[in-house]
Image (tube, rainbow, N blue to C red; front, top):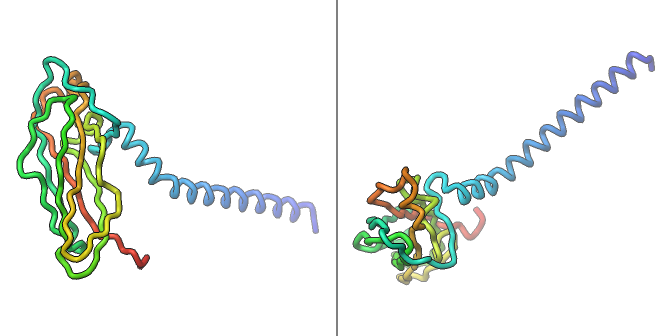
Length: 185
């Protein structure tokens, strides 16, 4: 083998290794993107992502009352009837609120479902603090079974200090329910 051929082979080897490293890095980032995005949303409240808390601090003096309404969307594949709390709740920032969604399996087969949520307007996400929630939890309902699904939350009192959220009188907590395919297909 000539020197020129050996140099060309070495260059090709380096280019191949660099290309392999780039592909490996892109695959790694693809796998990490979902948990990193979820972390980003949780930290910043991006897209109406709510925050998690252990307890409500109580309403401070001068807190501004908000109306929080609730809705639910059920995927056509999930044969559940979901009833939301009937009325909007008057909520003072800092006060703990407990509401219940009620889900009923309308079929003669057990069905497993789960849900995701968001809050609108999106700018409220960082101030919507959930203490307990049924979201992202798989739940199997027997034929005709109904179950109460509690949500315990409060609005962070800092909502009244933020100029972007101070004058937001109406908030919506929305859940999307969808079927979980247990057979992996």
